[in-house]
Length: 192
Image (cartoon, rainbow, N blue to C red):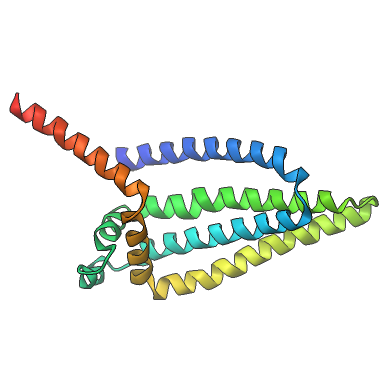
């Protein structure tokens, strides 16, 4: 294992713990007071986010970089190429970090939904909790299975769409600023 991959794993570890704490606190403080409609919306939203990021992760791990060169005139190509070079990190972030946090949050939405049903009988409450949890897990796994097949067959298009989105987003502007700062530092060192 290289130093770079160990460093990345450590960063992901810290990021996952930090995000999990923040989102767990938010979900425990906000979700129990939500209406059943909002709880269902939150469940669906986080399942959707998890599936989309999983699809992106699969696309970048299965992409043929040589075939991606055919699309060099397309919008998003440069960012897609950059992400292909870091496919392991894209996969880890999309599939593991985002996927796991969305799983926690959709589960918390399920708990909120059951709590808001206000079922008095313990056995019925347990049964409803099990059914809601099973449905959330089943729907998530079903959607991810469909999207994995789609991502494998359409990996180049997904990579280009992701690249195009990131190229026009604030994240890319921040990346460009960071690259400019590095270049200025390098130029300053070379001029001395």
